[in-house]
Length: 61
Image (cartoon, rainbow, N blue to C red; front, side):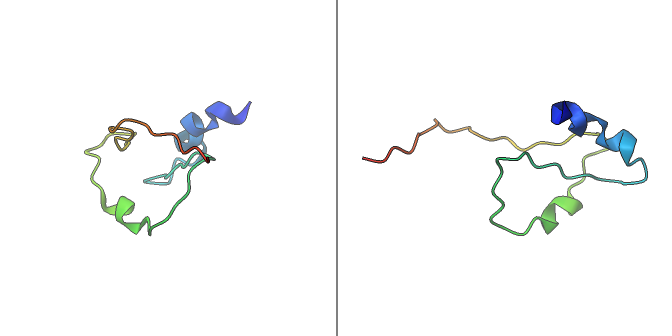
């Protein structure tokens, strides 16, 4: 039921200028402060390109 909650975050928190939503399978390994300085040119959503390389599954042998 809460899967689509992220789409309503701007409506729930209208006074916030930015919201950083990270999915539940994200592991943060660096400081995310840089994200606050990104100019999104008035756009509501921003995303980074990922998986541009071929995906390699880690398999234990």
